[in-house]
Image (tube, rainbow, N blue to C red; front, side, top):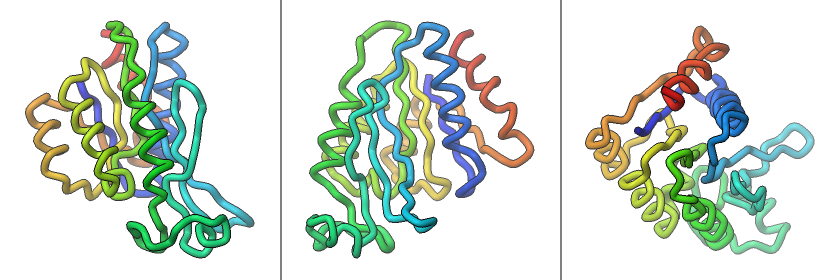
Length: 183
């Protein structure tokens, strides 16, 4: 079973994701995968981290070009908007996080999010596709304009349940998702 959640930026997708993950951990499920929080300095977004759900290990997924240069990263890499993707760091942490499954029936893959930055890294994209194709249970946050045909085909083939987070459902949607996993 794959559950995918989407919605416009800032609507609360990551909040719903975190509520579900925390509730499932309390119920004895093993969660693995990664999430990608934004990082702000002085109110301005400077980039995104990639964090292993199991270990807490983190690194840069992407940095604003000026910040990447200041921190000594190559700025000639893949760019998504005003950000440069830190491919080696993100790939290492993301792939390690995706391959941590215990194989237990109570293991759930969690990814927040599958979007342009994550999918711009070929090795990470391949591992995301592999895991989504074979995993027993997963909850993923997907970019609202997801257009990757391989991911969409996996969702179709696996009969993924797609939920859109809105202002009207964001306070209660986590309960629905938790019930989907524990039934």
